Length: 566
Figure 1 (tube, rainbow, N blue to C red):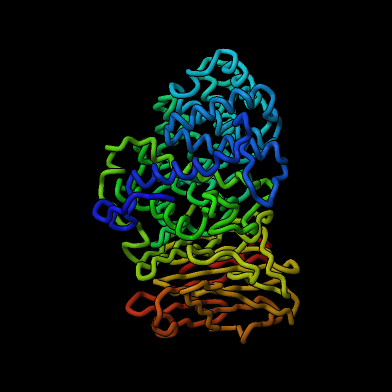
Figure 2 (figure 1 turned 45 degrees about the vertical axis):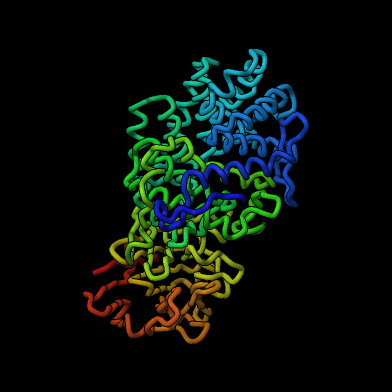
């Protein structure tokens, strides 16, 4: 990318300004143009993986997701090209929008882009093309979505169709239905689960908040904007803590190939006035995320986004991932809708939460504990509330961070009888400095997990029950990458790589640390652990009040166990 000189006066952390964002958007748009079909209706991007929906759908995906980028950029030259593609696409090139089909997803991007750029694109089309396009989009009003964030795709299409007066009654019904559906997944404090179960990840930001807030804002519906904007503001207070000091987003969840789409909710808060973040902090976090991925090879030698996290990496792909899927990262350019004189572009950058102080932050809704350290900028997530066994290992690990990635070595896991699987998670609570949960492990055994954290240090305790005497138990720590140090120190019940259950519940305790410091003090000098009668734990911390926890049988005829502070 040809970028302007960095401005370290306005942006002391990243050097990036609005001009850099514009140049990056222009470069990404220019790179995909050679891969458009002659009629510009499809973008057949290179890549080894074809999605489960097939090449034709993948080509539509390339059109729709890069159109979104052109819409945020308001690039009239590019939009002329996309207008030609729209005319050809709705004349029979594009696949129809049907129940639970990928074109339903892409119809939402097309509709949102048309809504945002109506005077520049839609209003310049012929009546015949507009009629065909509206008819193609209208199939989304009655197509059945998957029961998750997909419920918002008909809402997004309906918002545009309502604006242009096409099937207004059907559009209104689609909006009401979709917004009603997501209510059952709102769990409070600005958090949604992405469908039934406990699926907490970035879909909160780049889907569950993005679409309803943008719809309310574009419709000038103050009631809806107060509702969804209030939720977004609450979410951003937590969300800002998911970015490391190097700009990296937390490496957890599915569809991670969308990369800097993680910036979208940050910009959305500034765009709609619903954010707890200062303008300088908003830009610092968003620019940090974009520059992080550009530094780490997200764009190849052709200027194309690859299917991966840093460079190409099919381990982050799902069945629905195709060569154009990474271009949902276009959402990260939402900030270009803000005018150049908006404070988010003119205020000096300010440090993000991970750069300001050490922090251990409980998040009650997902039952997560976030642990960040200023010295190395690392953010660690202790995951005791999110699971989706379909997407293991990006949900089922007990820990994630901004500097590690879920790996084949099964980091942050508990092996019972050689099986690291985890299912049927039950959150047991989160508080100041601690989080706990219960889950089913290998062979039907039950594991109650507790983590207490301070600075970079973690105390990890596991009570294993329901396993046959002699069953081996092993726990793993962080799989550290380059420049990082990982430690796991047995404290109780563990001997080397294995522990063995006795006749009844057995407690295992270890100290852990993931740090970028080159010479950290010994773990045992920072925290000590006493195991009392039964299953009581006391954690002694230098200069701090001890923490005490008690593992107890749940009672009521249940064989399950729980843990609480006391």
